[in-house]
Image (tube, rainbow, N blue to C red; front, top):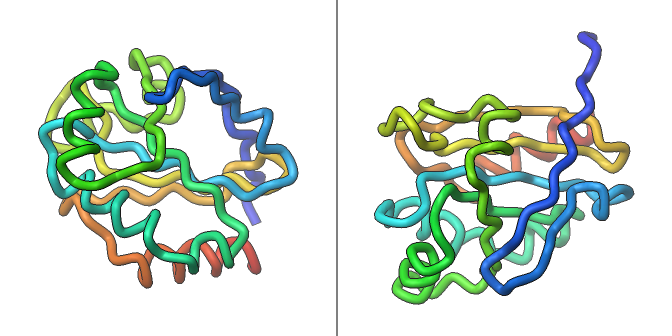
Length: 149
C-alpha cells in the first residue's frame, strides 16, 4: 500500500471560544469536515445529521467541522440549522495545507470534503463531494472500510 502521510497538525479557535488542536486527538480517530459553511445550507444540514447520529461515536469517530467564516457568520447559520457542534474557524491556512481550497463552487473557499485521520495521526482518506452532501450511511461505510482496512 502507498505510504500514508502524517496529517498536518493545527490549532484553531472554535465558535465556543476554545482552542482545538489536532494533536490533542492522538489516540482517537478524527474526521475533518471542510465546507463552505455560512451561506451553504446543505453544508450545515450535513453537520446537523452527523451530530444527531450515534453511529459516529459508536465507530469511535470525532468529527471536527472546519470553515473559513467569521464566528458571527457561522453561528447564525448554526442556529438556523440547529447545529450544536462547535465549528473550527480557519483563516485559510489549514484548508490550504489539506488541499481543499477551490474544490467546491467557490475558488477561494474549501469544497465539501472529508479527511480521515487515524489514532496515530496518519491521514487515511480524503473524500470530496461537490454535490455538497453525503448520507451518513455512505460516509460511515467509507470511513469504516478505511479504519478496518
